[in-house]
Amino acid sequence: MTTGVISDEELLRQMDENWFHTIELKPNVFSPTRRLENTNSLALTRKLLAGCEVRDASCLDVGTMEGLVAVLLCRRPAAKVVATDRYDRDDLRRRIALVKKCLGVDFDYWPGLTLQALRKKAPTLIKEPFDLIVFSGVLYHMYDPLDGIALVRSMTRPGGIVIVEAAAVFSDKMSGYFNAAGYIIPDQHNYWNLSVTLLDYLLRYFRLKPIDCGYLDCGGNKTDDGSSPIRIGVTCRAMTRGIPDEGDKYMVVNDRDDDVNFPDWAPSGEREELGYSVSNPDLVKRPSGAVNLYETLVRTRPLSFDVDDVRLRLSATY
Image (cartoon, rainbow, N blue to C red):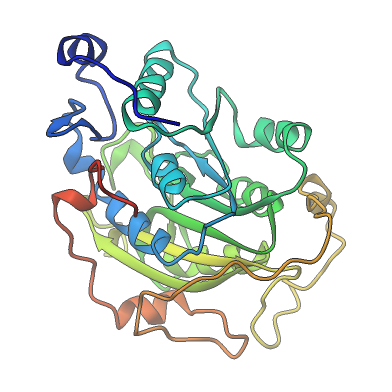
């Protein structure tokens, strides 16, 4: 797809001041947003995404908003890119169309779908599960984070990659912290902030093996037990079984009634693992080979970044 010709006047008419992402639509002309400081998590997502070998891969961006991650995937280039969001608004449709026209990219846009609806629809539109799913900035906006992790895993082929980025709590307790009265983060759409240790367990329970991770310090109040809110990013390998620690019989049970709600989307044949280059040199691994998220973050400095890590330049490919 070639870049569309659009005048500065037409561009300004089509832009408003409520964009979530900051995207360079023409040289030195950026989408107007007042939320640049609230998209710091993009730096973490992009750092992990840079390690994925996505050429010729089928990719899904969940919670795409104006499609910043979808654009990056198109530029790599991925074979197929699907961008989805639970919102279906006229303003977002206009922005997606504008981004495609200005940047000369093309991807499928499926708005107005919850993860449950997406899981039902996707097999009717594409033949096989995704090689890569970017699940960034979504988990803590869900009433049921277990449901979210399970559904995302069920849409990923074995050997594929899921990048999870979310608000979390830097704690080794097996706890989920509910953002009651906005006491952690003053965001009315922020619900469950999982501890790093609980997130680690749930990922492994739902057959997602952590292979890389990082974090950002972020604003917000400490929890009642004195733990700090953070943003965490985890690269996971989709596995066919859970990844329990030795002696954990709870995780290895395969006949729970609830599990039938999240069937694997059977691929057409065996495929090699999607390539990935680890970004964190301080990984601490369990005997299973899965990264121990809490112990790794204890030894890891928070990510530092600059403005171009949280906005999309015309020349950016990751």
